[in-house]
Image (tube, rainbow over all chains, first blue to last red; front, top):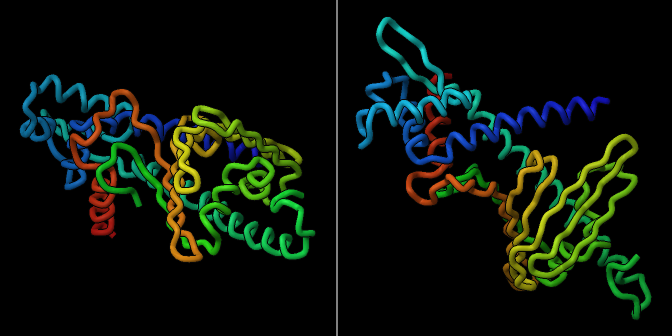
Length: 132
Length: 149
């Protein structure tokens, strides 16, 4: 039962993660994130360095907002954008989980190699290694 | 941490293993051996592995404990025995999204350096190499958050 809850949790977490990946799959959107990782900025400031219309940049910003990577605050007439760092933690989370998964598997692989070598020594000569 | 100029997050592990590349290659590609180390369940009652070991062939690992089961599956993308093996990987860890695993085995005397790379595949809309990669963004962010603390 705990397992099922854990799997649901993982499924929703990775679902959000996929949305973040999709949002950041575009170079313009990654550049926007990079800019925002240095501090919050107005929409117009974000749009400035890009050789595209404000409208086109706004579209990218909306994708980033939908994925939860970017948040928008209204201060009077200004729209201030900032990064929701927790959404990018999910990316770090996937990296961490995957690394830990493989670390454990490789430990098990090395353990098996040692077991196989012992089996080989004690097994009759004509038995192929690895067979049980 | 994530690698250099890539479009998706990457996980890479390096290890020196006391075995020949051929011995290690066997562990990754023979179902009876795969079943003995690839399961993440310490108390697995059953781990079944099967594979059609050829380019484009598929493999599957079904791991079951008393109250749940998981399956990992994929297909072989590149086989260069015993130096390199590339296969797709789909399972609970990846939310059943296809990812790519590359295992490289470089002989170092009587040891072997194993390099494992697990990466999420670029989606069709990803443009490779147009801008700085993930590692850069995450590093930047790590700097920013550590300054806050």
